[in-house]
Length: 95
Image 1 (cartoon, one colour):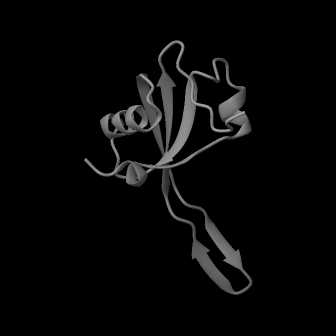
Image 2 (image 1 turned 90 degrees about the vertical axis):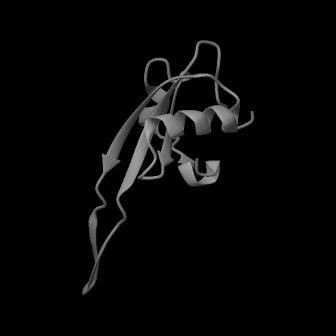
């Protein structure tokens, strides 16, 4: 298995991920494109010491961008919605 920091790249704290029903039970992460659901589940359980109920993943294609005469493309990326067990939460703010 890969190290945790190579599977979970960063948490995605967006309006959509925090305003859904049961928002405390579902957390979004940007993950490695080659990571599968089992690796993501194990990485989240190890990193945050919570029980994961399920993982849903989505692949996103990078957008084509232009700056003046220069053309480029953003990288493709993968998002994972992780459902936590009842009573478990992940607090990114530490408040």
